[in-house]
Image (tube, rainbow, N blue to C red):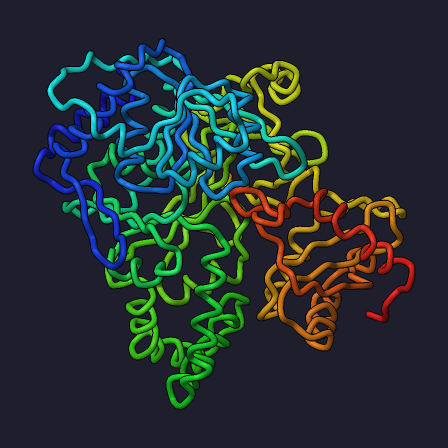
Length: 549
């Protein structure tokens, strides 16, 4: 039986229990298991009326909502392949993906999205708004689920950091295995708790990790609360009072900085206790804590940290889950200091979102946990992580050459550099394709240095290192910062680095890299090639006139 059968059975077993809710304009509305299944049935009736064939592609273009979830489940149930796309992406990029997968129908969350596609693609297949789809007949029955284990169920397009996005095909078997792994880990986290899990969610469902989180919550019978306005994220987070939720490093970094800034403004005894406790925590991690450090930490845990936790996230939180990119170890330690475990996951769309997951009982800061059950991981050339197992995708949509390059003898080349310790816990060093090779022949993974500079530079938004074929590294920094502050941050980072990894020049850009200006991918990753091309003159200037750093 497919994972979808298990999800539908869970919803049927909880007909009057709210399973999904969204916060919109400050108001919370939701659906029970029975109500969600009825929405799914309405969509299935509509899809059946379109005379679609099993395996036809159906584009799902909308922001997160209860209706999005019902659409997704219905498309899957009809044996169609769902192609979820990012509603904030440029219409030209969206159309390129649609042309690649040749959908039979496009389902849009609102008229603005539909019109943008129609303007870009005059020959587009039929497009329907959610309101049209859910307005259909409520009286017709639908057939049994049309999903078999070997069936492709989704095509999720990669972020395309260095080129054209590719469609990753995932099967029902891939998803079923992954849901068993994620649910098992959450059982471990929530053991001893008998009530319904409370989960908060703000990341777009069109990304693999976010989608797996959604399906895991439905499978577990959790109450999933959706944020629909990122400007209200903090309030919605507290309102949801979650047990856990999925994050990206950027949000956790912002939360950490916000706490520091707020307590700095507060001043008085609270700031003193907080500052002393932070310093004590650092010494404790370095193995040099003394009795006074234990005292300061004890006072903070009694008088300051509980208030911070309550104001940030609420009192129910068991853990934060973090993926999509390596998390700065200082940020992970910060939340641990507050008594909030941060569980990291690592994976790619091609691995059904996950390869490793932190064990809640054996978290090692700075590492992303052991390989999930059934998955083998090892290091290849240049310490590249290669993986095989039931979570590995069967191939890219209509790209046999790319598939053959990525999959060899069942092993998938991740493109990530890593290392593994004696406990089997992995650490991600950087992306192979991001390696900077200096004229001296030194190979440098830029991510760790970029994160170090960013950590020491409040107000900076992004740091990108350049230097391929050059004599030294240079940095491009975005945000409202002064040259003096930048100089101090670079000096501090350089003091801990060997000579060939030191940054010798920099440029400050007031314009941040964004999805809108084409310098970030849909899920917020740097398009390094595009940045280098856009700022080619700036980069040349840094090497033409070497700045004193």
